[in-house]
Image (cartoon, rainbow, N blue to C red; front, top):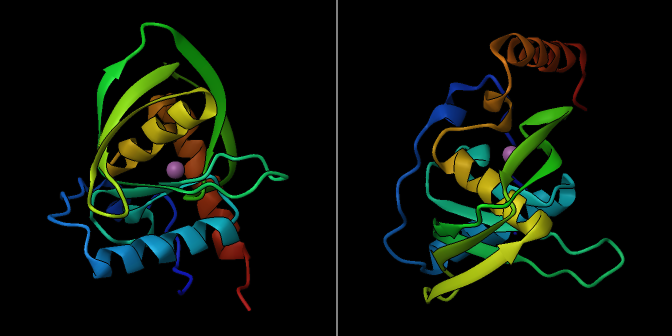
Length: 172
Ligand code: NI
């Protein structure tokens, strides 16, 4: 496994609409493993392939509590097939927007269809933090970052701060 480089806003790649994966084969599994390692190292609870500059529809998620055993989810070609009318609000962050958080409202639970690590079609109902995380990551596959839900003024301010922090930092 190897750790991958995560890209940040305003990298135009983050606006890419990712393409479906034809089949979950050993190359795709390798990529999923690398994405998971990268996400755990960051650390984060979700990562979409486009955040490591790969425009394929795949995401990895692990919303288990820190003290619990790891329980990674691999979702390839994920698609929301049902969403609840009830909404919930979470303070969201993103590995591509370091250090910024904002309250985002989304359906509280969703049913999602996807190909799993073994290329099997799955459909599962998720709620709570996992539902928010799944929707946040699927947004990435459609070129949407959570700050796109904020006002243009607020978004521009955040992007400028991320750019400045990157310019001012030294990577050793
Ligand atoms: Ni994100």
